[in-house]
Length: 206
Image 1 (tube, rainbow, N blue to C red):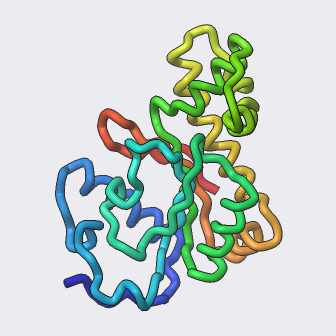
Image 2: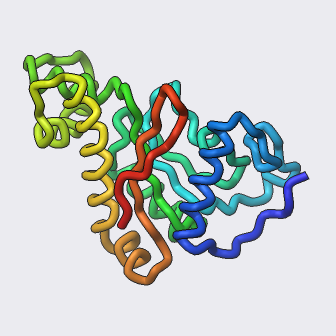
């Protein structure tokens, strides 16, 4: 049985280390007592997440499994392309200021379809139906900054740049996130999940 959860704030560096350790367990195929498969019988009464994840909606990436975490430990927001929207920003403010999470991880991943679509929009003026274009427009700045003749290099660099841009957006977000960072209560980092290996590489820390 999992130990009782508490609302004692975790230091941002400790929270990041906990995420990285969980990813190592995941890659090793080891299920700890904190694995998402094990249900906390008291979960309906509380949640004390130590980390917030801004991830992609891609069906191949599951943050709870990627970091070998149980119910109530991660506060996850997702949108195709893992970028900040007003709704996601408000959710992350809630996850940190109200629920007490001490780290936000912006999690991109290799082979991101949304980023690849943005590259097509930049490279060949591709236009997508419905509201997909609005999503793509949010990713175009990162894609344009790292434009490259080598298409594979362009895709991998665009994923990293998109993550970095959104880390910067969150670290400068006032009044809540920036103040918590300045007070040492919060850290915002970026990471990229490798679809082949399952490893998360930390790429930027603030």
